[in-house]
Length: 179
Image (cartoon, rainbow, N blue to C red; front, top):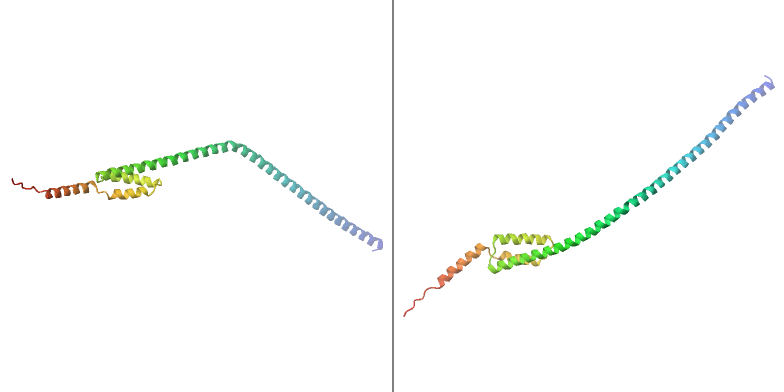
């Protein structure tokens, strides 16, 4: 082959290589630019989504804030009512304690004056005492209950009275009077 044929062949190979190389370089540059463009596009879309989320959150917060205004007012009203009811309950509890204490004391004094207690007295006093203690009553009434429990039952008291009368009759013997 002659020189011009070799030069033509080398020229054709170089031309094909350059064309291929240029195509590869252009393809890489285009792909890199496309990747950058897609990346920027994705970043822009992500930014817009985040911005929309934040705007949506702000809108929701505003709506919730507006909706909570009457709810907060209702909660304050309920709290005030609750405070009033708690105060009334405290007053009722104090009054109930006083009433129970008074009932227990009166029943004790009545039974003490009679000298005995009945089963009904016992049940009534102990029911009142249980309620009194459940409401936070103090130990003063516990002492009264101890004294009440030591009172004899009516049956014991009647038996004791019969025994006293029998002893009294035996002690009083008729004295013979001589004239």
